[in-house]
Amino acid sequence: MDGVLKGDTLIAAYTFTSEGKRSVRQVAFLIKDTTATEGYGDVRKQKDSILFKNTAALKLGSWVLKEIPCPVE
Image 1: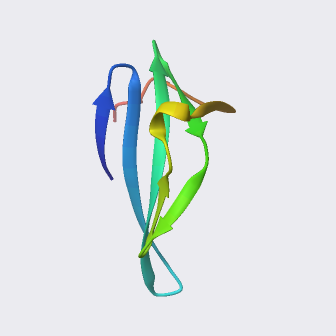
Image 2: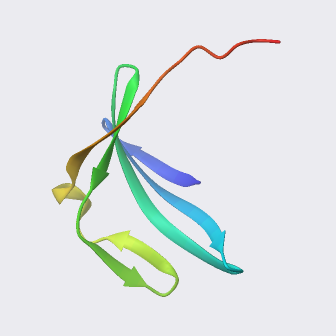
Image 3: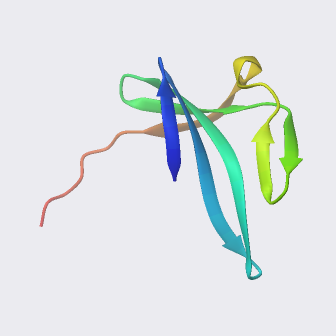
């Protein structure tokens, strides 16, 4: 995954393979303290990529990632 942190917002490109085809989906997360909330908005298709039409107009979803301690072995 490649991305750019703009202020408190991470805009990244998620690359994956499905049914033998490589695709890219743009993702966005608002970073606050120990959480990352996924952003969503209108998208457009460009070749094998799904990109946001306007990253400035993203809305926050209900999907929140929370930081947890990582056990050390």
